[in-house]
Length: 106
Image (cartoon, rainbow, N blue to C red):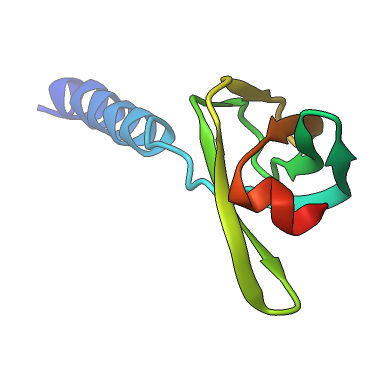
């Protein structure tokens, strides 16, 4: 009787250990900081630093941002380029934009 119980118990314990290890990691929020902002001949440009606090790489298909100047919304812009973030790393990305948001920067 014990010859079957011990291997069965070991097998079930192994399955439980694997089930606990295969859960998806909890992802933390990506932080975004303005590194540079200024007018260009075509409109305006903003340089952003994205920080990935996670230990897995992330791919962001596009980003959308709202610019506030002195607490007042000055406009929104979207970056349609995919952004790859390395694990526990940072990426600096420059985004050019035009329209009313660029006029507020200039």
